[in-house]
Amino acid sequence: MDETLNCEAVDGSSANAQHLGSGDTIVVILGNIEAREVQSDDELEQILELQGANLARNLSAQDIGSQGFVTVEHSLEVLRRMHAMRPSIVAKEGDELAGYALVMPVECRSFLPILEPMFERLDSLGIGRQRFYVMGQICVAMRWRSRGVFDLLYSAHRRYLAGAYDFVVTEVAMRNTRSMRAHERVGFEIIDRYQDATDEWALLRWAWK
Image 1 (cartoon, rainbow, N blue to C red):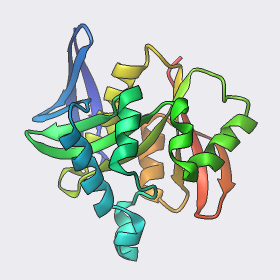
Image 2 (cartoon, rainbow, N blue to C red):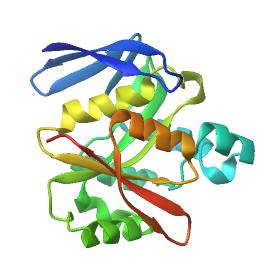
Image 3 (cartoon, one colour):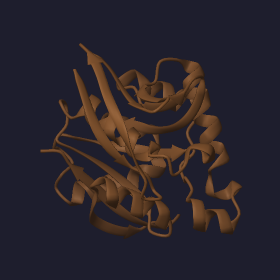
Image 4 (cartoon, one colour):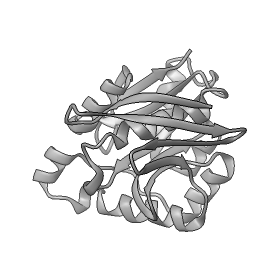
């Protein structure tokens, strides 16, 4: 299966991404960057390294405003447990990690208690038993920003997961304006807003069916 997709970068530029697949093996390619499922513990550790560099507490106020940030901190053990249920998606250029987008089936709900307010909101909206999963966190390394990697990661999510799910849900801090714009550009729509002890959040859904 070969298919070409137009991926728009944050800066408005675009590039062609190609889907190459055979059976259960799918690779989404943008130039020299490949998006695919996580394959090893080493890649989970790369995710944690990139995550740590982009946690809000490790960034300046200027970087938070201009580059965005991530909030939830995972452990290697949690990533391994999530991976055992469904591998997450990484974008790689050679051996280097360009970005990641975590796959979090609802069965992972108990792994991260900090996300319980989000799941409670989803329950209150009546979608808790529908066919969906949570995109647990997305992050693109600085060197690869504005090159279409964000869209590439979500394209790979859809290629791998649309057969099993009808839509994907995520949440973004309202103050993370860069991430909000990028998610809305991909096709996410706001379905709810709420406040918890850490931030004000927008719940977003990208419907595939």
